[in-house]
Image 1 (cartoon, helix red, strand yellow):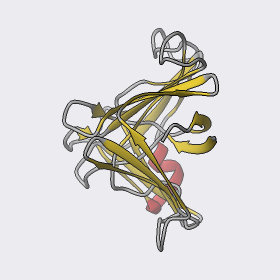
Image 2: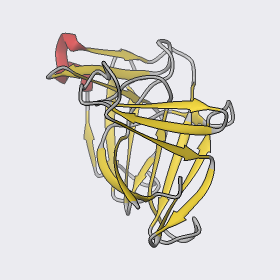
Image 3: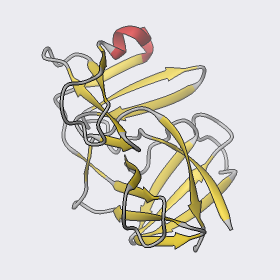
Length: 192
């Protein structure tokens, strides 16, 4: 059985994590800073600006944020106005890393590598860590209010099926996350 998991590359763990948070059309999005995120052969990274009062987005044509950025959007909070807050002097966030592969066994070329942090709603999705298992709850509301419309458990380690795989790492202090904004839909084979 396949699940279509809309993974928003953005979530946060604590109010004091380095991130940018903005709200549009009733949906809150939290984006962490400083870590390269991979989507196929391209990559992106959100970084705090030199003044430490806003966040810039760098896009790379490489799959590892190497080389010069192919494009840069400066002042993300300046674009969103009063419904946006940048935190650039906070602590490092901890959470979960999800790496997807186009083949089973969690080997070969990476399709996407994203980082999510537990217990904060972003775009109607909330990830929660519990005893080494990540639960993804999807809500009808962009603010995760009410009961979840669906939940999927993602045990730690490699999960394979239907020709694809996902490697789930984290839910402990061993995975440091600083995440970017982008939306991707990832097919994940359900073995859970």
